[in-house]
Amino acid sequence: MTTEKIDGAAVTTKANVYFDGKCVSHTVTLADGTRKSVGVILPASLTFNTGAAEIMECVAGACEYKLAGANEWRKSAAGEKFSVPANSSFEIRVQEAYHYVCHFG
Image (cartoon, rainbow, N blue to C red; front, side, top):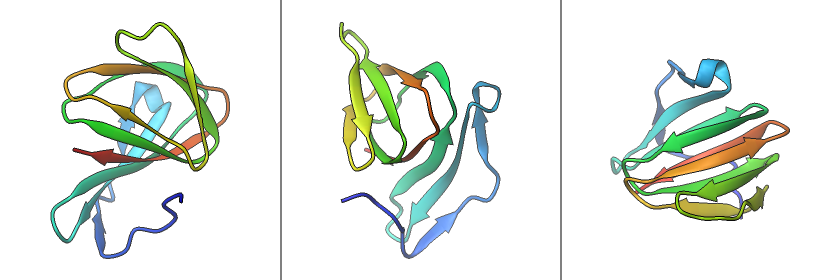
């Protein structure tokens, strides 16, 4: 099931803007302190570095991604997720707007 609504959350209203505006997100903090980000990646090929482990949940659009050390690209579309280890990186290719929820930890 795709996350459509996050109840009981505080949203940081100032956007996190990366890669000259190709990725824009907002930080969401739940009542228990859990942090997530909700955003969109516009058509581009980008590389992200991770501190904490991440689960990227696609809520609309699609992407191709490649985890650090992997040889092949994989696809992720609406309703699908992929996991990225802590202290790692992943490449992402987007041909249409990719809307996501990033679950940390």
